[in-house]
Image (cartoon, rainbow, N blue to C red; front, side):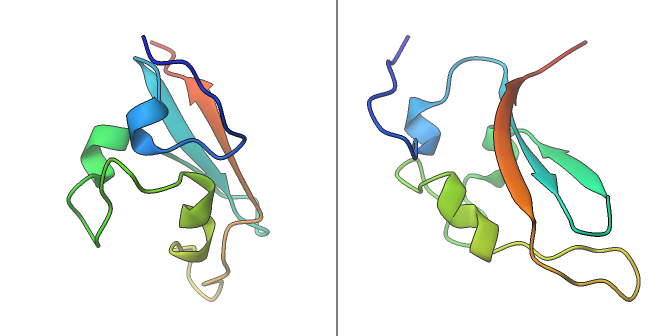
Length: 77
């Protein structure tokens, strides 16, 4: 299992079953599995996780804001 050595990990640094959460100012929370994002929109294994905050926009009608918060958490069944 890789060990995190930076405050802003890359996709390659993520542990098994770890997911990326985004929260918008409007209150909507969205969860992404890392392997679903790799290969889309230029995201590679070396992409920094917290740098994604500038790439996402809220899909709630009339919102379109960038995420207020981004964090990593374990997948829960």
